[in-house]
Amino acid sequence: RAEFPMVALAAAMGGHVRVGLEDNLYLRHGELAPGNASLVVRAVTIIEAMGGRVGSVADARRVLQLNPTPAPSAPPSIAAGGAPPAPP
Image: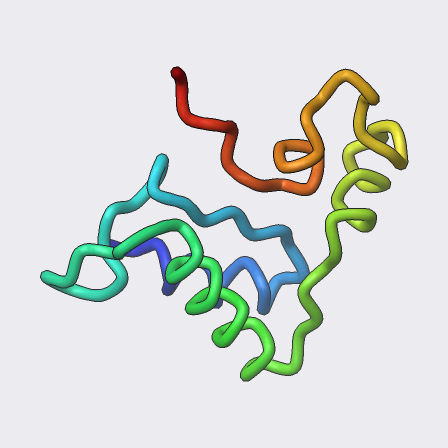
């Protein structure tokens, strides 16, 4: 319910933002989000409208002090941030 106001508040304070269906199922009051992408698009829209910049995957890996490249054992779709393949 308060996810997007918190996105705006965190962005205004120079903080980091995380959105996803794990945290919130709604795009707006009473409207279920069709997927994570719609939540991300809304957060990006809010941040950019406030004059902020959304970081890249490389930026996030640097901030979190992770390897700059994903582990070679991860399938390419997962390493690129995609969904894991469906089970057989």
